[in-house]
Length: 283
Image (tube, helix red, strand yellow):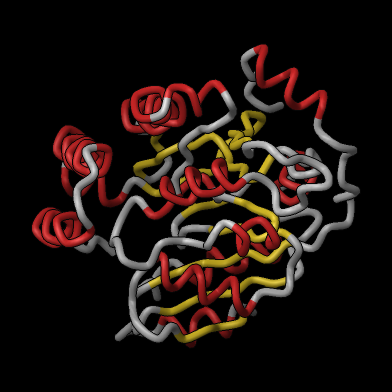
């Protein structure tokens, strides 16, 4: 199931070109990480063994870990790419360059996918106007759902673009984040310019806007704006370890501040400054 669009969106979908045959599209799962020795093997094995059908490959992009992340990922069966420097946008871009899949799924090291994730993204990206999909989030503290943070993350999918680009929202823009396992056609990702590498955070929201504005690379099927969709059938389950360590109120306050600065057009240098001052590593 996918979020029902406004009437304009439904009409635009109906007039787009024929569906792609994505029933056997290959999927590359790309995991950027830094010092994730404790979690990375579990995540890689989960993707390789618990997803049916399985992706064609799992690529772990290491940002210069000082622990045993690389060896743990290799033992679990991942292809490891050593990034030229740390930075989530850069790491994901270098993972995409190394990927062979027709569809690229960007996954956080502390996120688990539903078992039918590959089937869901194949079906959603069969629609030529759809350029990016992600799963609804479920944030957990251990096995306990963090309902406030989950609801806030879920709601930002809509209220983010409503606040910043209401006309684009009507035309299919939604705001997805990295813990929702964002998935894109490789051709569309390259045509839209990939992830920004000059910002430490909000690179996921920037990609949503870039893909929406660029639209599908295959202009023979659809020449207009691209559609960003959130899949609702089953969640991507993400660890709330940072939120729990910071405290839920403080964590969501930090996220709100970063979002406001980004919406206000803060330059990358300012985002870097705030990020370094407020964000602390939690592993």
